[in-house]
Amino acid sequence: MIGAVVSTAVALASVRPQLSLVAEPARVQLDGPGSQTVEVTNRGSSAVVLDVQRAGFALDLRGRPRIVSAARATWLSVKPKRVAIGAGETASLRVTARVLRLSPGDHASLLLLASRPLSTTAVAVRLRLGVVVVLRVPGKVVHRLAVLGVKARRLGAKRLLTVRFANRGNVTELLGGRELVVTLWRRGKLLARLPVTPRELLPKTRGIVEVAYRGPVRGAIVCRVGGKPPGPPFRLRL
Image (tube, rainbow, N blue to C red; front, side):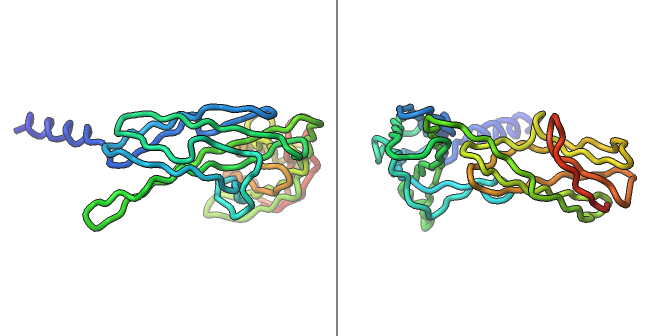
């Protein structure tokens, strides 16, 4: 009986989903005009037909990707625009970028890979996959990241600090990691160093990061945001 249960579990684990697609790389970075190949693998049990389209790409305030109704990037092209991929097979897409009259810096767009509907009894199954394409146009690179403000609010037993940023430069900035920490001070004494979960901030956009403080200190404190040297002080109450 135990052997039958194990065999059934193994059989269920080996069943492939009907639709499953993987694109590699999931992000294409092009420094100037050029091309790169994206491999799309069908890991599902059914053959699929993909329509490949361009779409606008943005990040919301918290850094989550989203599709926007902006004009499609004229600098981006892909071939083929429709491809059939059998179960377990891989197809290649050729992504090409042209500089045209673009300003120096980073320009982001999105390739949407949308499968044609597959009929499963009365349900039509579809799948969409996005590949981010970033083109860096040669020229003067401007890094201009500004901290707009910090707010604190209670969330249960902890305090949640929300830091607002603006990227006024022309390249994508990484918020978080070793280059950016939030520090809390009182009377010149360091109370806490709060790491920031890394996220990107696209050029000419704004965003926020949130960090939690669980320490015992309450009342007036000074918050600084930055690496070395730290940023300007923001006075808060925890």
